[in-house]
Length: 132
Image (cartoon, rainbow, N blue to C red; front, side, top):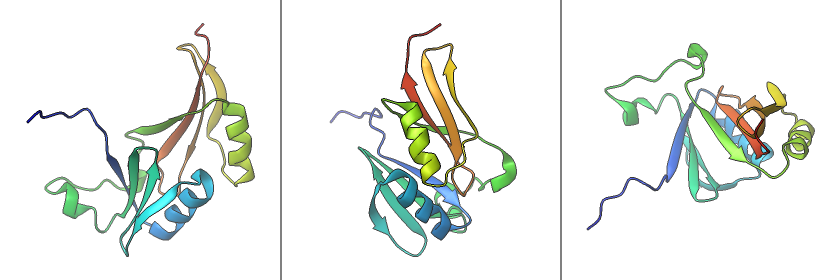
């Protein structure tokens, strides 16, 4: 048997307001809801599941670690690569999403924009462009 850690399957994001965060994901991403119960909602993003989990239930999966408060600051960012950042940003605005940054051309060859979900998770949309 080969043991491989090369396949990302799921990401769990903790939220204080599961209903608002689930509604945001359904409206903004058009992602398929593949599982739901009273403490979680899981959406399919291609081959990866993004599981929204009530922060009250999160200690069960992170113990003995602790769940950080939502105002603790960004500790990661999720990126979605797209063909046209400007078109995606226009669609996000139509869906009521306020952009935090961008779109900006980055020196490393990406055009990016960022926003956050209701739980404070940072998302980036990014398009490959010619580097500076």
